[in-house]
Image 1: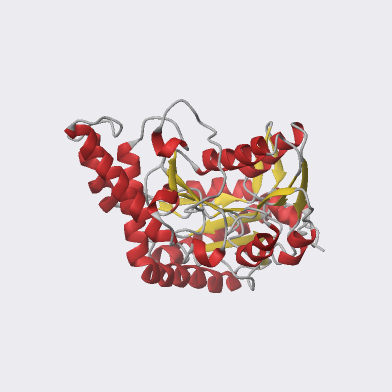
Image 2: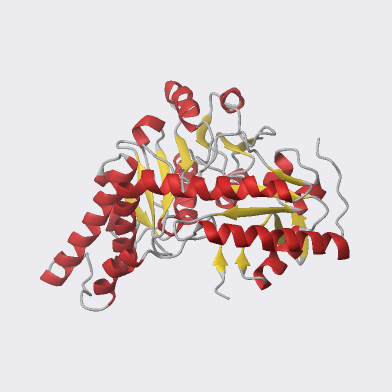
Length: 387
């Protein structure tokens, strides 16, 4: 049996058209973009073409795009830039369920002397814009609010927050890694100052991401030692990966609407089929969500065990828990929206991709029902209704 991949929020399969675009830059075309000879000029042109494609995807200008190795690197860079420019004085606001890169970066600034406010989401998985605005202070240096939550798929009111922050001169960072390529993203409509995207979330290569910085926004490089990226990120360009990111951006731009329809149809078919599984709960179903993400609790069945059983049955999904020091703990995101630890531990994230087909969903629903029933029978997880 061919394994079925349903964990596209973790990473997506590389599109064969992206691989085709990358291939010459892995072998024939091997110049350093910083070199002035013809090999360097050729690779430099490829990098700039990719930059333009990324900019077009998010409605920005090419010179505002900085290539990085990952969204984590880009997040660290923004927090470091803001903190160092403020001499590590002042205040930062972020949501309580930001990506760990933002959480850890905020912790670092806090250790250096800054103060941090974390604003929690409601039970609908959405951080209230008014709560973020209420947390602002005269010395607030940065607001960080992801565009789409990576676990629940819920969309956040970034534009509303950015509008309020702009009137106060507070820069806004949005981690749009999960959103870009799944929903329309326009930096001008959002009104943010920094936006992060990652190629491997929309069928591009691993190791290629981008940080968009609004023109004239102050930014001090985190990685130094070279003049690359207009001195905003030192280091030799990973040309094959950047070319792949650019091609993935072109495809996402051109195919966004049909992709949205396909992904939403797969998710909706899956969620409709859950009615056949007793005690299943779809989290944040009525909230604005990404079209491809479904987060579900199967009360009485432990999520990690379900993930293992489904893997053995040929289906890759993600659990609603995190493993730390060998101990399985409930996801902080799920606890933040008010789920009980038991319900959080009984949760799975299923995220569909453009390579998935409806017949795969039918088979998955059968395997899911069988394994949930079996797990409840042999190792029931006590459930406590969430508040």
